[in-house]
Amino acid sequence: MSYFLDGLAASVTPFSLLVIIIGVLWGMVVGALPGLGLVIAVTLALPFTYSMSVSDALLLLVATAAGAQFGNGVTAITVGIPGSPSAVLTVVEGYAMFKRGEGGEALFLNLVAAFIGQVLGAVGFVLLIVPLAAVAPNFLAPEMFALTVIGLLAVATLTAGDTLKGISALVVGLIFGTVGADPVASVPRFVLGIQENYRGLDIVAVTVGLLGLGELLHQLYTGTFARSGATSAAAAKAHAKQAPQRLRVWAPLSSLPPVLVAAAFGCVVAFFIGVIPGLGATAATFIVYQQLRLVARRPDELGKGSREGLVAQNTADNAVVGGELVPTLGLGIPGSGSMAVLMGALVLQGIEPGPNVLQTRPELTGTVAAGLVIAGLFLLPLGWAFSYYAFQLTRVWPAAIFSGGISLILLGAFAAEGRIFDIYMIILFGVVGFLLRRFDFPVAATAIGFVLSGLLETNFRHGVLITEGSIGAFFSRPITLILLLFAAGMLVQQWFWNRRRTRRRKDAPETTESPVTK
Image 1 (cartoon, rainbow, N blue to C red):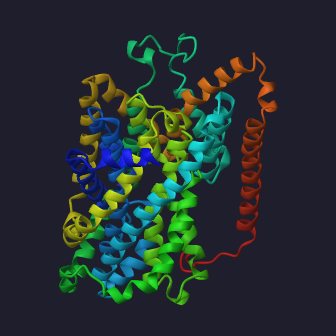
Image 2 (cartoon, rainbow, N blue to C red):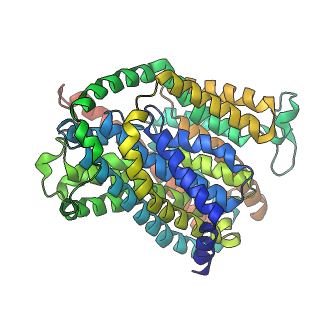
Image 3 (cartoon, one colour):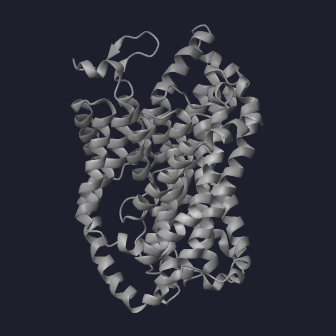
């Protein structure tokens, strides 16, 4: 446990604390702006990590994630627009409370839920990462190859309703990863005569373009920004009628104990969902909400402005970050799009996430855990003040959000190495990301496929060398065999699940009832 103390010591220096505060504030602002969210918040923060140490870079990105998850809920409560899909159910419960004059209480419960989720998520991260560190020495190249296959298939099958589309998007990312020098023989491939491509496509340009610029272009195309502006104006009129509630972001302390069971339930379920690569915060919040009726004291109030429903799903939205960090740092498999960006930051710092990190740089896991807890502590005062004034932020002109987001993305890319080529690449992959979203392909699968392509190929090639050129020998290694069989089982299970869902859709009678309020 000494390395956790080392990580904690690295997190409480004056500069590191300042980095955490900036990350929390930045995440809250971006997360609260309609149409943006966690992935874009982390993506926009990535260029600022280039000149930082590894520990401070991790602290900035983790604090940004904590702030963004909280900011999502603020917008959903005050305006009725989720900052990201994971906050959809906050609209159902929180905005209903706002409309009946309980907006201040809803914002306070959102803050408490975010704090609980961050801290308990950090505890879960510590408890799971320690066993991973113990077994890490048993994972050589064949085992790492099998683990990477599991991560890729998990993302491809769980982030898309159509498994074929998910795998296709994943293959696109793997193809992009083959550009540049061969990782073993250093033979250039698919460089198209472009000098900058000899060292491979820049990981920042690809991930920021796909996940950041691509998302902004898609929202511009679908009119999300225009709708958010109209809804904000409508919400402003409702807010003016309830002006006293904005002066008191508070709830009676006696109202907290009844919702703690829901908070604990949301934390535990969401954390373990986050550990599974590809599911993410959206799936976690919906699963928690659907199962909440089993533990809720007043299940009949769900969907009507329930405090238990609000706290459970907001706690889940924040606890899932700690869960996603387990496979990202412990196995080198990003748990979500935002974790793919975090992996990119580590790669740029010369750190290869996975079991090697647990052996060579174990203090980084302590840094991450400390960062989550400290960010949660700063979230209490900063989030309270932010909730008080946040409604004015949601009234920002939608065009300013769009143009400002694109400007930050391009400026950050150029500031990294001062190359115009990086801007061209971000624009190119922004268009690719937009087209993938336009035709319902999971962009996260493409981004994660690109990030993991080098790890997949390197471990496969080294595994073949270990087994003296025999691919079949992979299956003679017990751990590798179990992992590959598990990966095959995931594909089979997803195929049966898709068939069952298609059959149910055909047999189910048409209804206008919302699935959220059932």
